[in-house]
Length: 348
Image 1 (cartoon, rainbow, N blue to C red):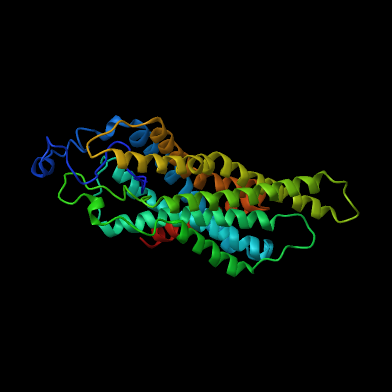
Image 2 (image 1 turned 60 degrees about the vertical axis):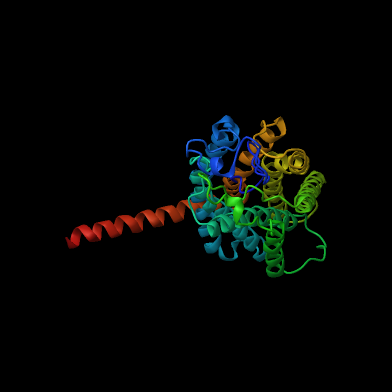
């Protein structure tokens, strides 16, 4: 996020400067040399080309699609179950919150690596990025529980309590010990934003464990639904079978999003953080080469951002009448806009 967030792979700022560099010479660097110790950010194309492209795609597609999904779920009334509607609405809200942070990160990357906003904006955007990401993970797990086969439901809290718990889980998974103000490199030519968001390795391991638990829950829900559909159909209504097929489609979509967009980031996070800690203990400053693990971690961040684009596709193929409701809403907005335009012409 710059990636909001983590130790900068192409440069390290550990406090002590190399003998050949004085603090005054560091402060007098030109704006064009945004790295430390001679590194240039454009030496890392994965971070400064691929990630901004993914963020731009997520912003351009994900924001309008999730805003439309929010409008549909707000208007859906009782056509969806109370719990499912609440979780879907909050999943779309989390995706909207995530995409709203992307203009700031795009500005940062295309700077390049220059944070032009106040430090408070850096901290708020970093918190919103992580809270929305892990709240979305929690709501996806809750949605998969709603889609389990019919039968005695397992004991679980009410939907409103579960919604609050999901947002609290997102808040708990966000880096809560923000770097001090010097993380923005005051007095330097290129202020940076939260380059040490994962300075506490324990938090990184906790988020990996949280994601793993949610992934296993979604996987178990899909296996349960698949077995229920494979079993011989009983005398129950045909509507139950159609409900299960729609639920299986939704849970399968969530499972694919977890596997393709979220799993690579969490598989790499723990070894990447460990590698950063080792590098920090061995290096006294200056520039270090971008490692293969750095590049893979950066690419996984690009994949992570794309999940906000894929969630609306899941709604289209699994939520009954979602496409019809989207079309009706767009037609209503179009008619309203054309009516207002006609009225303004008539009055002129």
